[in-house]
Image 1 (cartoon, rainbow, N blue to C red):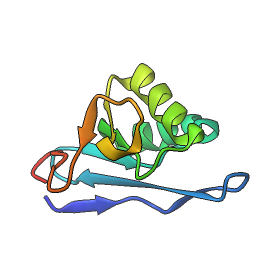
Image 2 (image 1 turned 180 degrees about the vertical axis):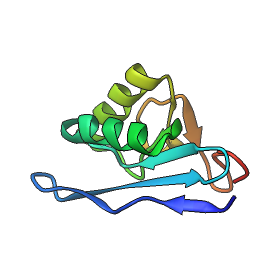
Image 3 (image 1 turned 90 degrees about the horizontal axis):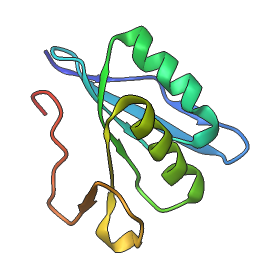
Length: 105
């Protein structure tokens, strides 16, 4: 078991960091702040690690993140998530205290 924190992923043109968290026991994963241009990289990493993406979560509303989440959602069937205060559309609109469950976390 335990939580797996993937490598810090960087996209240079937008200066964006993307993170992957996963339950090491079940392989359920969350990706935080994916970027459209690096979706192929992220899909490859998830496949190589044998992870099942449950959520593509965004910490803020930038077009590159929202479109990145949408691309991952279309490719893998995961749910998208963002703050309800962002004004963006997502499968899960989060409020303070909400949780995104993946594996045992």
